[in-house]
Image (cartoon, rainbow, N blue to C red; front, side, top):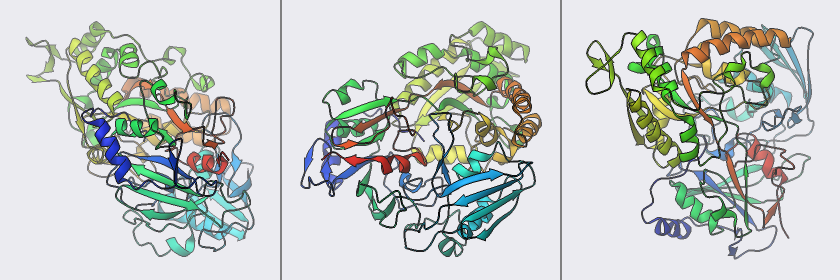
Length: 559
């Protein structure tokens, strides 16, 4: 998930200084000097995120997988650039085609590709990958390898709309390693074997390093020979290191970016893509408890929120407006069924919130808050300690809800508690993000975040690779998503999406807030080849799944 700006301000310079001294930073510090100035010796330093201490886990199926696993080490067959509406680029796959009814995908793989341990990557590995338990989904009938460079995927239903998930997010696994993994959910994969441009070098509590994969394919061994991922549990400390030239690449929220970029070493690009929402544990039938399981409470809270104020005060005007249909506007405009759903309400309407609650049988007590049958609406809203923009937004929501007679108590938790709560559904409201789609089509959000197959009972983790943390399960949505998945007819897809949008705009299992600012800071003085406004060839933040490995292949040290 996106890295956030920390709230812990006390003794920040001391913290940052201690981090610089204690992390064992290697190589040449971007803009800050170092003991090795040769192009071969430059180390690119990346903020690994706030999950500390770092534990060696490169299993791509694990919720706590380290960033470098997804793209730099493991790769899918094709690369989809989520910042543009364009055809995918070959990675391990050379080309692909569907049969006449979309139930069979034949992929031609690149020849001569090797795993990082020197073994050949062949179609047998790809077939094994798709047949592997967590990847055997979407009605897959068979995955076969008639020869070393041909993969044939056969499905029970057409898979046109599932193309990105199948070809762009399925991490290829070496059969000679993973066939012996008894439990993929607990396997930490400390010494991963992938096809990507990097391999693991060293892991400590404070950082981990990857080095260039000398067996990387014809694109060539990457020019950046070593990348160090540094764990820091406070955004401000990371910002201080970045400003001091001790970090070269990070995706994080900085409310005053000029303070980082004004020295001419670090540049910044902002690419708003991903929705920021309130997760609600919404479905009582699946075990959710609390007032938020009542759709009327969710609807009232939705209209009570002052998104304009949140945008300016919590996100300093860097975010975009969000659609309750979860279409990224204007990119996905053709998929929006009702123009009224182009943007969630930007101004609060306390009166409308009250009308919704009163129509549902709630009454306002002498304390000014609504309740029913003597039980007040009391909601707990959590966000991750250190994500100041999210923490500030949560406080604002608490205040705005109170204006409408809804009691919301905002608090912060550590990352692991946040992760566990959303995975198991044991929460009421969470400030969180939704992963935006990598193609100009909201299908993947609808499927992964809103369908019953993508969730589970409270107390059980959501299925691997799915994200329906709200425990939302609506038969109309399920059927419409299945219909969209089974067609290549745009009109039929629009009709299916209209049904999805009607349901989720009314039910609000995720209450939309903003399209989040996605600031990427990068050292443009010492390294070249970054995605820019003029050449946005990939989603630029260092935590970007798949894209991070693609970006690293394009980078070179300035000589």
